[in-house]
Image 1 (tube, one colour):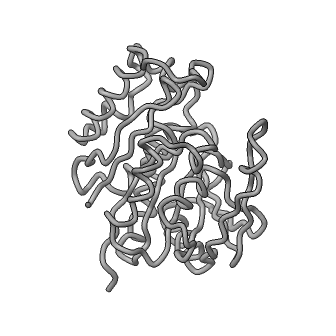
Image 2: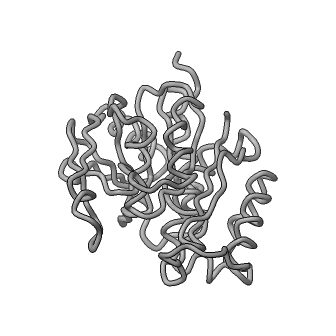
Length: 259
């Protein structure tokens, strides 16, 4: 029996994070030392949504540079951790048992929501790594249920990793830095407290907050957190592993469950 794996949510920030000398980068570089060594990693990124749960299922996966306008060096980065078709098949079995119709994708590579944090945390690329999609247009509760379906992977040595952003409004970032605005810090404080309290009802209804529309104008960067929450909430509240802001208002918080 493998050691039961924790569940993580990390904020991956701008694609330039591998080069940026900021606290969140330094945290990710140390992250692997804080968790048991997994047999494989299943990552849910903000940057892949599909009508049904979809899983990368090829033995080798390419590096997707899904952004534009950044320095040339960023497009030269690649992350060559192997895929894990057996883990993808096992995840698909669990999803079918929960009533889903999952899709195994042998063509798609990994987007930057996956390779940016894993490149920093596991730079040798030795841990097999697959990606699972979000559910396009689905609710917080439906993403919690998605996480619950794959939670048994934790007892099989698989680390479930959500990758998004705790506060994510690209129209409000300050590329020159600057002070964190009240709406961003208020949402971050609420998220910290609600996750620590394991308040599923409040978390599922986060759009009712006055500051939610500013903190998360679209929901894609928060939905990986709800998948992580679904896979872990029976462990109790989350432990905040890191908290900082970059570019003024971009929340870089990270959390762990079962640590």
